[in-house]
Image (cartoon, rainbow, N blue to C red; front, side):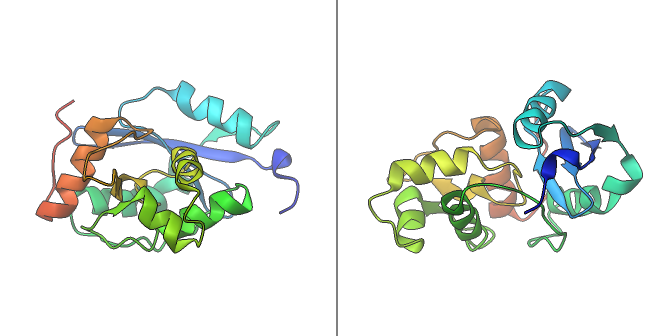
Length: 179
C-alpha cells in the first residue's frame, strides 16, 4: 500500500446542472466523491483522516476523466464506471465496497444481502458501518443498499441524494437534484 501520506491529492468541484460534488483523486485513481452540495470542508476532513500529511491541490484538468464519467452517469447515459480507483480501508471494508460494486444498476440490495455476499451473515451492523465509510459515493454504489423492508436508510450524502440516485437509475433519465 505504500506511504499514502506523501501523495498529493488532486481535487475539483464537479458542477452539473443542480449537482455540486467535490471529487478527489491521487495519481492512481479516484479516491473521494463528496455529498451533494456539501462544502469543501467535507473533503478536507476526509483527506486529513485518510491521507494524513498529504496536500490537497485543485486540478480540474487531472480530475476531468473522473468528472466526465460522473456527468455521464448523472445524465443517465452511463451505468458502469471504468475509471481507476485508489481507496483505502480495512480488509472488511474493502470486501463490502467490492460487494457494492456487484449490485447491478437499477437494482437494490439489503444490508443482509451484502453481509451474505461477503459470507459474514451475522455482520449486518458492521456492513452498515463499512457502507457509511465508503469514500467514493455514486461510483461505489452504496446508494443501492436499502433496509430489509425496502425502506430508505442512512446515506452519507443524505436521503435526498440517495432518493435522486435511485430515481435516476429507475427512470434511466436525468433527474435534477432540486436543491
